[in-house]
Each structure stands twice: as structure tokens, then as C-alpha cells.
Length: 310
Image 1 (cartoon, helix red, strand yellow):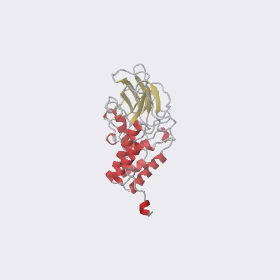
Image 2: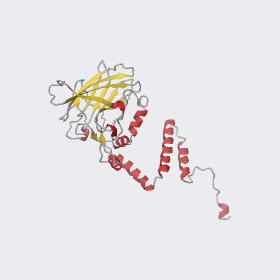
Image 3: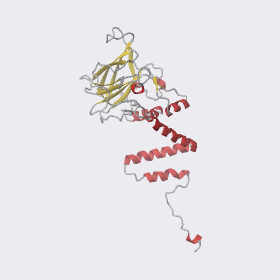
Image 4: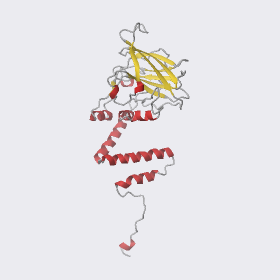
């Protein structure tokens, strides 16, 4: 029998890639048997968009390998006190987009949620209302905050646990700075029967995001500055209500319209104003500030996010 006669004829309809135009359908067909419906939906869309992206920009092999290198560097730059992956998501506006898609009327509630950021820690010190979150020598004007938490009908919510955290006026969170005490400028409060909590701190300042990793390289390549406008972070938790994660920014800050991580929305520019008359504490010298804000919580699932750092 000749070689020609013994050859096995090619089978038809095999799910084999023939050219670049057939890759996507072959991959999608392989994923179609995924039993988890949500995983199947998400991965199908992800593959479609990733493949469309590569075709749209005609991605080169050099650019592909550079992208893989950046992903590897993001993982390598993340550790117990820094989460480069969250920072990267923030720096391309993805964190804010996901947040607004999942809160209120696409985020257009009285208190819009905001990105968690890479510096929230669990187990902030329990602090009585009126207490200070300044736990080591921290420069800056004194800030006296009094806030209200309500439901969507405007009724005060008692027994809400509220995490507060901020960077120091030198631009570093305490886990970034060996000169600050552990948990400096962090505290956990509980709203009273009138839905209020209040505390003392220092007026927040703007600061640069960490720029010594791949996110910093991206910002420099795009001729973008690394600065965030001054703000306080809040996380409000109560059973039966959706956990509210937000930031409140200082009005008039020079970086409000160019936040490096796109966290500013109109709802989140707060009322920080210089105090008048006698300060609330005898040890205050020089200018001092007051801050008030009303947080609105929606009914929903009560769950805490996974801390980006320890």
C-alpha cells in the first residue's frame, strides 16, 4: 500500500486554531462548559474584551512580554504593608468605576461610596466618642470632627461601627513611617442614639501615592503627577446595611480635579472650615478646624472587605 493510500484523511470540525481570527471562538468554546454560571459569564466577557483589545492595538510580542513583566512586578511589589495591585487598579480608575457601579443609583446617592484604597487595616483601636486618633507626635492644625450617620430616609442610625483613618500631614500612613506609633491616625468609633460620632485629629493634607514601583513608572510615562487631594477615610458597618466605604475630601485642595487615583466625586467634597472663637480643647494653639458630614447607609448585606494590608 502506498504512503498516499495509507494516509488518514483529515477530520472535519475539530476545534483547532487555523489563524488569528479563529483563536477567540476556540477559547470561548473551551470555556462554555464551565458549570459556575457567573464564572462562565465573567470569563467569557473577559476573553472577548482582551482579544478585542489585542486586535485593536495590534499588540506586538514585545509589548505583550512587557505587559507580563509589569504584572509580575505588581505582584512582587505587594507585601504585608503595601498592595501594589490595588494601587494599580486605583491609578487607572478601575476601582472607582467598580465602586460606583455597585453603590446606590450608580453611586449617585447622598453619600457616594469611594474606593477602599491600599491602606485600610483591620482592628483599629476602639476609641470613645470625643477621643483623639492622634497616637504619636503629629504636626498639623487640630481638627475636630462631628459626623452623622442616617438611613436613606434621613433617620439616625445608632450602633454603627465607624473606622476612621488618614495619612499624616507629612504624607505617610503610619504603616509607611517608622516614626509614627502603630495605629496612629486610626480609630474605630460607634454612633450614639442620635446617630453621631465625633473625634479629634489633625487636618489632613494631600500626599503622593507610592511611586517607586510599576504604578510610579506608569504615572511618569503618562506625565501624570502622583498626588492625592487631602481627605479622611471612613468605613461604616452595621448589621442589615451595606457597608459604606468612603473618603471625604478637603474643598479647595489643588488636586481635587486631578486626583492620581480618580477617587473624587462631587458628593465627597466635605465641609472643613477654620474654627472661630475659643477652641474646643485648652491645649490647642494656632489655627484649628472643624469638620461635619452626614453619611447615608443603604439597606443591604453587611460584610467587611478583605484588608489590602495587615
